[in-house]
Image 1 (cartoon, rainbow, N blue to C red):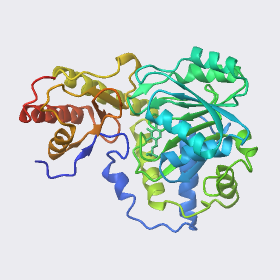
Image 2: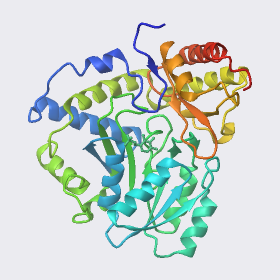
Image 3: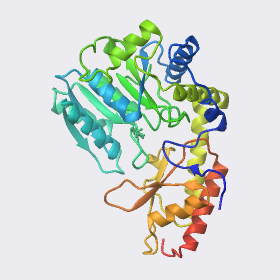
Image 4: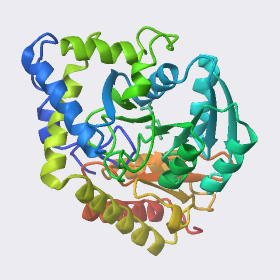
Length: 369
Ligand SMILES: *Cc1c(COP(=O)(O)O)cnc(C)c1O
């Protein structure tokens, strides 16, 4: 039994550093200049990660990542717009549900959970329906870990003169996106994923012209990014009570991100985590759901052992008792479980986590993998 808190091998909330958690030990006043400077510095650093300062605004928003996705769609898609939603997992389905709830017209294109959407698909779909104004895409679909070919899809959408909204929640900060190379209207991410902050705020990189012309689109006061941005630009303050501790933690997490070497270093560590995980799991005979070519180094999905003695709940509890929190599968057709590669963890810890998995399978007398 481990006495320390277990390590989260989950795609957010995830394991953060002690230094990041320590940054929350201050009560900030939301009117205070120092806090406003923290927010401004945060937005500036976030924009730098996508090389977006010239073309995009960073609009932070209180809440979990989904709040920011909903706000982006509600703000940037006019009420008479039409969204093509590209789906290969649960988060893609959530995009469609948001469009539905917001009353925006939309169509969906769904591929299997182990099949990326292609630029050819998008080209064909846009040709077939000139009424589409926006396309919504999940960069890394966290329900499996599959990577969709964002740069190629973005080029096709731009060629058709349509606008792209990217849910890059689980990839932002670890997989490169250059706003000057990849055309998009909005890219959405959050504090508690690859930046290794704590959960509680999302942010939307919104193309400046698109945001400027989005006044009055939003169905909601609290979720109106146009209003959020203009208020912040005018006053330096958040429109409503900011998640002060979350902002402070994310600011501290970004200092560490840059000290580590920024995106290339973060990507390298996560790729090494993922590789260590895959190597050790395959030694146990546990099979990855996705082929390596379409696997993002964010989260990995494994087929559950076939042995009837395997039950996820017991497996989970026993692995947790050894110090690691795994993640249930999110597939409807096949039984799986997931292991996150992101967070303040190292390849050595990934190997230790798999050693714990091996012990647990043996304790549970799971023989047939
Ligand atoms: C985590 C995540 C979200 C946001 O989920 P919340 O539970 O609202 O934080 C959205 N999209 C993707 C792809 C994600 O991984």
